[in-house]
Length: 322
Image (tube, rainbow, N blue to C red):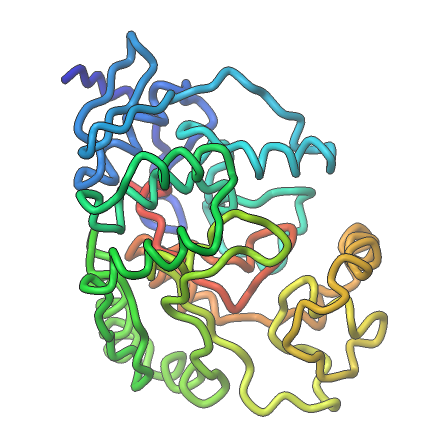
């Protein structure tokens, strides 16, 4: 096993232990991911530019493809072709800010399905066919059913501020969510009460594709949770701020958007235009900074930092921290 850890980090960050990816080579990023998911990867060779998973499946660290993330078409190609190093192509922000609206800034949305299949599923039960289809973005519904059966025993219930959330116990995800709950109740009781009284828990483990793609949602691994607004009414100017839903209410935001992706493609251009002119800062669904902070301290990223925002969404991604 060849490991040369060369990680460049910043100190005194608002979010504890955020990894600075700006000075990291592809090899550095893959080594960091290796260390973040020790239960998935058997070996990593800098010289051979390859990762070997515990089931013997081999993949490149860096496929050599580069994409202009400021170009929307190129950005979408990168989203569909994520090698292991691309997972850390953008670093998590150092401080809380809602919203950021930096064009196509989406740390954590660049996901490599093979990494998560090997990390959160009983890999001994997986065939190369499943892994090969995930590598080529050709997963089918039968793959989802098989994957769901393979990780069934690792999904456990976590009591989070009274919500019962199904999470994956592998890699410490479930334990991390439990610690977030305990710390919010102990150190930030007002924020814990705010979360319990204004939110519904509407998304833990759910094996599914991301709408409109054949890429797997992070909910498929039991590492993400959504908190949607409770009792939304037309009198509210802010709500569950998911960019596709927000576009339904433009420009006044005075509506209660249906929780559906029907017509999402038709609304995409409108939402992009609204994002570009940044009309939402005064209406944005602001989670208290201390809530986002505590989640980050336990290895969770927040969708409120994304250009295509998803403020209800928290996702366990320890590779963005150290």
